[in-house]
Amino acid sequence: MTREDRTKGFFVAFDYTSDALREIDAFFRKSGKVIVALTVREILEEEIAKKLA
Image (tube, rainbow, N blue to C red; front, side, top):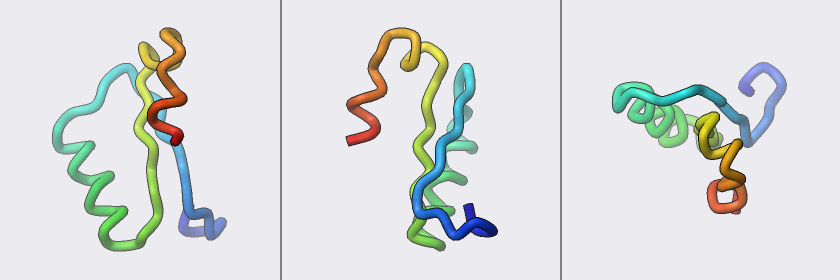
């Protein structure tokens, strides 16, 4: 994201630890760039719209 100067990025995983979510939040506070953490379950259950809004 930083190298390509993007303001929004996506991570997809089966699950996230609380540490990983804290790091995503810290990255946002430091850079102002958003990382959307999606889980495979959310994608399969089509819950993506809530997070992308």
